[in-house]
Length: 477
Image (cartoon, rainbow, N blue to C red; front, side):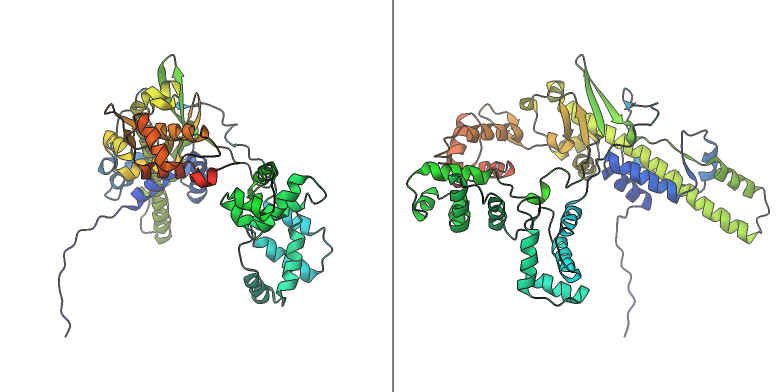
């Protein structure tokens, strides 16, 4: 027997306009231009240019008005932004398209080289399949048996391991050296093979190390290498290791011309004018958009017409929907500008001493919560701004997340930025004796001697964040 019941629940849902604002907030400047272009193409009632008047505001006074839906006070704090300006306002716009250096991709380069081999159609297709399996760093990590299955199912090509390997070995002779290797050992060996005609002792010993002592090499067990290769002079091993270190472990992301060059577009411009910090928003973040006058006049004409015309009513309904969407989009863009400036201004105020000179030691410990409390917004809002935006200063371009760091207590009772501690850690490791590198325990004691109250596990965490290996792997002859 079925029973009817009444359940009361409370749910929080974002309106479509709020979702649109959140999406616009988190994208960087370069993507914003593309997003605006897409909206202009999709919505005929939206135009580029300054707003001519507020005449269209009367069209949005009903209960479904976008102004009511996109009430900023519900989820944002609307602050005064006096003293802040838009960088580049009034420019002719000729510099809007950032140059992108056009180069062929790695895949295209390899396919081009494949064409120079004397292969029949079957072999050529196998070669293309192999090249398509090369990852961005230049390796083929997919098992060859799986590639054979792909060829059978997708191209109806029956082949075997010997034939596929034969073509793979040909591809491994392509540029850049080391391409299409299946692991690091093979990658390094392929690069050393290019020096086969070089009878230099360093090259010979390096090849022996990679071929016969690769495990010992990765663990830096140099004494075992010398014993295994029956070498008495450690200089031979030292010079060979130095040669191996100069090889490229990621051939796919190496040489210029194999990737597209992208240019970083800062979202903010911060300049120091005789000790006064001036913050401006990149003008690309402030596109001039307006509601189309012709479409708003169409609505006025409809009010004066015979409303019994069904086709006209449907047309006007469509226009009204597009006008609402255009108004919502313009509002979201404006709120994006306000939120970006509000957040960045708070970061500048918080790290004011650092921004004056760019002295990293002046960076204060700062977490997302600190800024969120200042601007009275949610931490997630600050995170969206910090994770995808950058600022141009007099001493370089920095991502906003660069200025966020946890604090470490000192003997004096003050907190210092973890970035400062990392710098000290890096200096200690760079100055260590390479034959006897410092362990994490020793590094902990040295940092404590400098006044930083830090645990060994924190030292290990910071070392890993700096991409510095453990002491055993830093050991050199």
